[in-house]
Image 1 (spheres, rainbow, N blue to C red):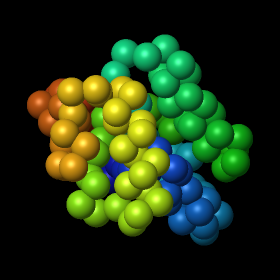
Image 2: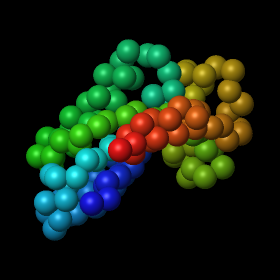
Image 3: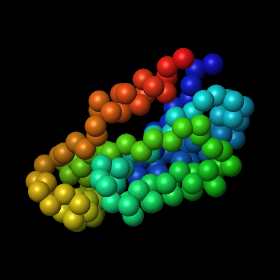
Length: 127
């Protein structure tokens, strides 16, 4: 059986579809190894409060679904003001200004450590 992989962002986008999949395809979720990637800008820093919140996202998913993934990894995302609507842009600018004061708030910035993520995926997929 192929591993099941789901990716959710910091706002929990995708949780509803995961819950629907769980109800329809319960057995694969409980029997297959699952890597849960929680993508959030908070994962790019070292703030203990941010990391507690990230752990809380995984716990909330478990509480909402009754399902526990076999592995949870937190992955830093990207700041993409070119893609945000006005409200999201204003909120994200404030967050980035506080967390990364040297960032150019008008430009997109990638925080994902792709090499580290690749290594984690390689390790998880290894037989």
